[in-house]
Amino acid sequence: GDARAGRAKAIACQACHGLDGVSKLPDAPNLSGQVEPYLVKALTEFRDGTRKNEVMSVAAQELTDADIANLAAYYSGIQVEVIPPG
Amino acid sequence: GDARAGRAKAIACQACHGLDGVSKLPDAPNLSGQVEPYLVKALTEFRDGTRKNEVMSVAAQELTDADIANLAAYYSGIQVEVIPPG
Image (cartoon, rainbow over all chains, first blue to last red; front, side):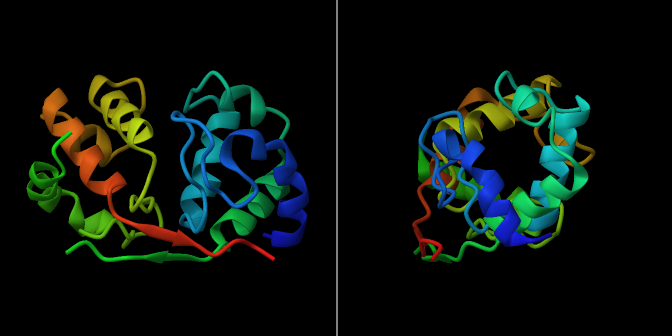
C-alpha cells in the first residue's frame, strides 16, 4: 500500500479515528501503528459485509482494494511506542 | 473493570496479542492502549457471535461480562505514546 495516498483518503476517517489514528469516540478503535494485514482484513470484511458496524459498513462500501491497502499502509505506519506494563 | 484480574486472564491472550498488547501474528491486532469500550464491544460480539473469527469466536466463548470488563481494563490501561505523522 501507498501510505501517502492513504493519508489523503484518511480525511474521511479522521472524524472518528483521527488523522494520527487516535480515536475520538468510545466506539472507534485507535488505528495508529495497528498491524497492517489486520487493517486490510477489517476494512475488507466491513466492505464485503462479513463484519458489520453501523458506521463502518457504510464508510467502507466504496473502497477499492487499493484504497484499503493504502489506508492500512498509512495507519499502520504511524509510529507508536508501548510502555510495557509493570 | 479490574486491570489486575484482567492481567491474570490475559495469559490466555498472550500467544497472539502479547501480554503487553503487541501483536505476535499478522491477523491479530495490537491491543495496547486500545479504547476500553471498543474492547468490551469486540469481546462481547465475539462471544455472542455477532462478530466472527476462527480464533476469537472460540477464545471468547467462556468469558463472563466481568472477564471482558477486566481484560478491557488491562489492555486499554497499557500506556502508548503515538508519534504524530509528519
